[in-house]
Length: 56
Image 1: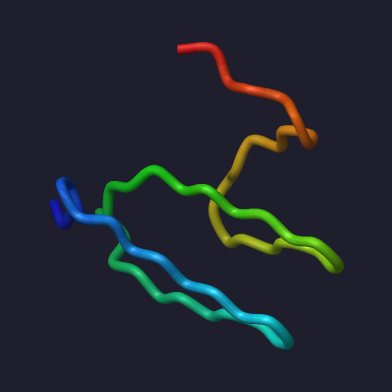
Image 2: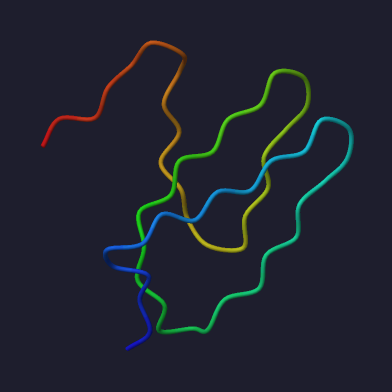
């Protein structure tokens, strides 16, 4: 299984999109946010509103 465990990957854009292709068996925690626009994903991401925190 591929993983970025122990690594921090950061992707930013100020005007445009980011397209990221990962192997099917990739394991990661994802934090995504937008100031103006939407977030689309081909895999399920739980949606949290601004200020919400996920319980561990």
